[in-house]
Amino acid sequence: MCPYLCKEPLLDLLFFSFRSQNSVTMGNVFEKLFKSLFGKKEMRILMVGLDAAGKTTILYKLKLGEIVTTIPTIGFNVETVEYKNISFTVWDVGGQDKIRPLWRHYFQNTQGLIFVVDSNDRERVNEAREELTRMLAEDELRDAVLLVFVNKQDLPNAMNAAEITDKLGLHSLRQRNWYIQATCATSGDGLYEGLDWLSNQLKNQK
Image (cartoon, rainbow, N blue to C red; front, side, top):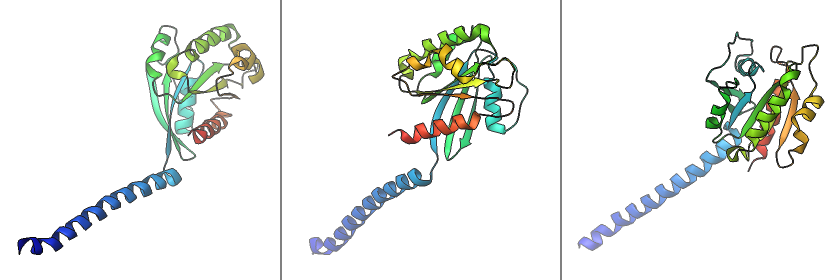
């Protein structure tokens, strides 16, 4: 009697287990589909450059939409910037020469590199090139896309994007996906054009 009496409950249990497993599987599928269609994508950005290039001003102009009073960044600032359904986690790392050796500690998992150049600082543009070249040789940044912000375009003696492209040797970066954008951090000019480019790069990633 016992095998016969237990047969139907056992079938019910097996059916419930099968249905539950399939519900979980289908739930995962729908969750992934929903996130791909409507959820925010994430991108880790490392923003570096020589000291006084305007990195922190750029970060908080993007984050708050306003100019903030800044002091030289000794460590780092990190903020999340929401733009066009993408959540950019931006790490702004100090650019003083004694701090630059620490940049490498922020390289891991970086998808996009923003290199900020003071376009009015002609005396240190070669130094900026050396630092950029050194970074791009790092294996951890091998797959990171490069966005160069040519900042302080509002100043009368500022170099334009074409001149900075030449001085940084960007055309020699044949294995690197890069883009250069003229910017003015205080007014916000050019900043969102740069984020547009980064957004498109993220969408094109498989």
